[in-house]
Image (cartoon, rainbow, N blue to C red; front, top):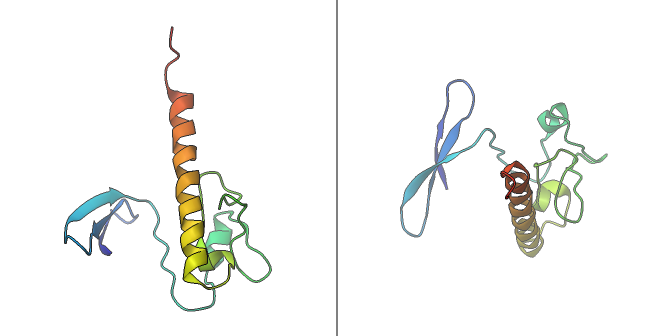
Length: 114
């Protein structure tokens, strides 16, 4: 659960609490998307260049990637059927995609081995 936001006019980090252990940790972040209700409220995402469909949902591919590199979306915000199982499945897919994305960046920036 997010318990605090940190930054100087722009978000730089969030504090999150593990609800099972009570442990808190600070995580770097430059964006926070809060989703409530049944209708998407994502107009600001369009301003960032994230493609939306005609119903206002974020367009993603089979790996939950949007048209903006490194930006992923999962669950109800993609227009998927509002079911927990779908959101969980897409969340797992998005997590794997994010891992591959970061790994690929790290591999490209790693010094060549002799």
